[in-house]
Length: 298
Image 1 (cartoon, rainbow, N blue to C red):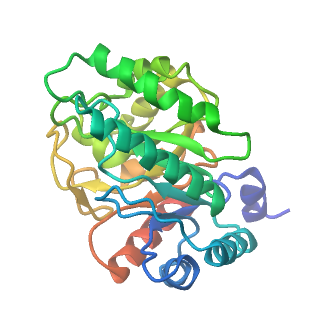
Image 2: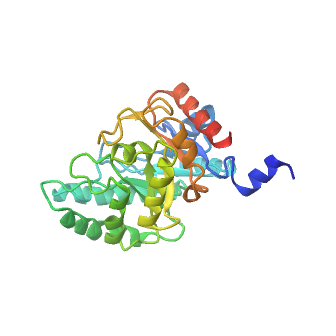
Image 3: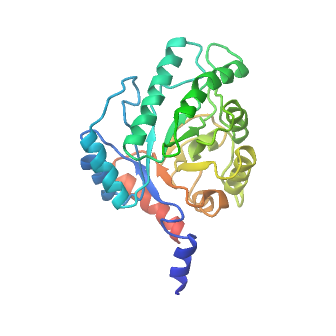
């Protein structure tokens, strides 16, 4: 067996180690638009919206399109993820917002199952109205745990994505995942989506010789092994600890290229896909995907 073959067999390099892809547009068709875009930019994994990300509508979807998309992704070994709408906030002091959050997330989980998604990403939210974090987390438990209990073994994971630490965020630093997981009984269908821009903006310096590995060590210490299921690979337009969520293209921000290379060598990221959510259109996305693939394979 050659060196390159042995690397592939060990999963140290190449797509089996870390599939790299992008959030893709799907207006007009999951398969005809979304997968066509993915192929054009060289994506090995995709993330999609199944509803307006800035609204509460819960569209039914098309069974025919769902089947075409699911079959094509299976045939091409493309892992699929769904991002739930941004309005969801289970820490809100407004009952209507929480009720709508329940229905919106239930819809994303159902649609995720229908299109064969491995996980559904949801933002961890904030304690609005001047409420104490403990009160907000109690509400998270009351409203999210029943949704987790509805999931079967074959359903998508629910992946918690922390924020950049702005406002009364419930989860921004690695250790904030601890109380959140505790509130949800560390449910077996609960995982983490780590956004590099968010965690950097929240105060975790990913740069330097061991910044990325140190941050991942802290995350594993908090939630345990095997809970990191997805990485949103985004550079940051803002400095570390700025608490501002402003994504930059890979290597064009304050994080730089090296931390992304380091992320893909940590044991916790073995087999974990990387999805970019970077600025620009198709050409820029293709460049970011290619850049990450070179960092992984080089």
